[in-house]
Image 1 (cartoon, rainbow, N blue to C red):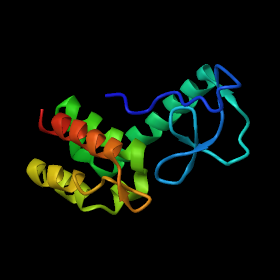
Image 2 (cartoon, helix red, strand yellow; image 1 turned 30 degrees about the horizontal axis):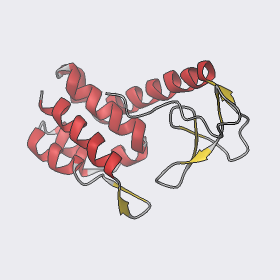
Image 3 (cartoon, rainbow, N blue to C red; image 1 turned 90 degrees about the vertical axis):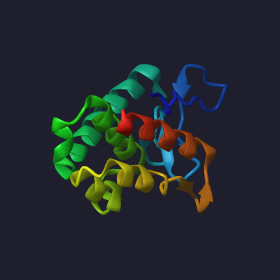
Length: 140
C-alpha cells in the first residue's frame, strides 16, 4: 500500500521536495513528513530517512495502543500502522477504533475506519481509498 509519494514542489527545483500544505491543511515535506513552512528543501534520499523514522514511530505507537496486533496477521498490523502514520498516534490513542481492535472486533474496526475520511472538513477521495485499502488488510 503506497499512499505517500515523494512530493516535488516547485517543478523548478527537480529532484528536491519543498514544504507544501497537504489536503488536511498541514505543512508537509517529502513522503508526508510534518514540518515547518520554512523547512529547507530535501532530496528523495533525505525524505526516505524521514519516512523510515515516521514509520518506526507509527509502528511503536500502534503496538503500544493496540498490543493485540502483535499476535494477529501482519496485514492487520500494517493496516493500523498506515492509519497511525496518516493520522498520528494521538488519534489512534483516543479513538473507538483502538477499542474495537483491542476487543478483536474486526467488523467494528472496519466501521470505525470508514469514519476517518475527512480533511479540512471535507470528505477526501484519497482518504476514502486509503481507508478502503486498510479495511482490506484488516480483514485479510
